[in-house]
Amino acid sequence: MIGRIYGTGSYVPNRIVDNNELSKYVDTNDTWIRERTGIARRHVIEEETTSFMAVQAAKKALLQSEVKPEEIDLILVATSSSETIFPCTACIVQSEIGAVHAVGYDINAACTGFVLAFQTAQAYIDARIYKTALVIGADSMTNLVDWTDRSTCILFGDGAGAVLLRAEEGKPCLMAAHSDGTKANALTGMSRHHKAVTSLEDKITYVHMDGQAVFKFAVRKVPEIIEELLADASLGVEEIDYFILHQANKRIIEAVAKRLRLDLTKFPMNLEEYANTSGASIPILLDEMKRNQRFQRGDKVVLAGFGAGLSWAACMFEW
Ligand code: COA
Image (cartoon, rainbow, N blue to C red):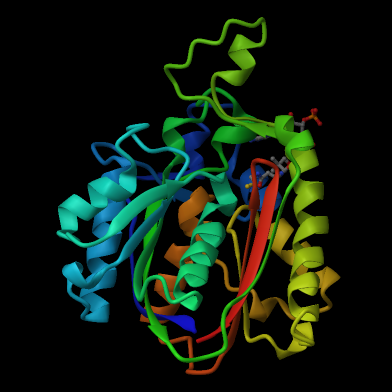
């Protein structure tokens, strides 16, 4: 069984902060940010919350799929920046959309979260446990970054994306996933109200990152896991129509394409507009591509996420 994508939706805040505006807050400039990351601007929450954005994206996915809320069996929200630790964001979404028969929970795996949530939903569907699943990625990373740290605050934006999956007979989704907790310190984030009692307090209160270590990890592990995933199905990378990677940095995506010896046109990107929206980046891109009718039935699509944990995951399905 496969969970076919019946509908997609996304939401980004109206407030846009471009690189020039950022250069008023920290010592940076548009040229540096564009050259090192490919990012030009990011959408930043004002009154919005993570759950509000998740609900908006979910409502659009439902509308597009013509599925009734009460038909949903499962709601998964990939987030590491929910405004409440509990209840989980998925239960807030359930209540707001009236998915009275669904079970909901959040998956916290930072920027890898959406791919892991998508895999979880596909596994439930393939096991015939659930038929209809709503998978959401939603994050408010600008709430967690230190706006005085130019090495991290330039990288992130906010948003949410959702996909509505329905069970159909078909080739199951291929999946691979890994974590390496021994490298956890390369990328950490604590809630703004966290009171650390160590001398590292200032460093760990916000998102703290060893940028070069994360960059090297991503360009090595993402091609590796894609090859591992496809080898299991005896597929070559050239047979894939689209590689939808977590939108962290243009140079990471270019390096992955180069290592796989593939044309960059197979790697759609929208990070110039939204920056790194963590768990939301892949479903926002999926939604944009679907609305622009970029997918044909039968297209082979790879999703790949990577980030804090460290963790990385990939899956492949036919559209
Ligand atoms: N504007 C201007 N200069 C900046 C800057 C900024 N926003 N941030 C850092 N610099 C400076 C540094 O201080 C350093 O100056 P120095 O040479 O005088 O010491 C110089 O630019 C180079 O810094 P470095 O950290 O080596 O740059 P880099 O090429 O590694 O790029 C990142 C930094 C963060 C863009 C890059 O490492 C990266 O993208 N890493 C992956 C991050 C990521 O995607 N994380 C999320 C994964 S889910």
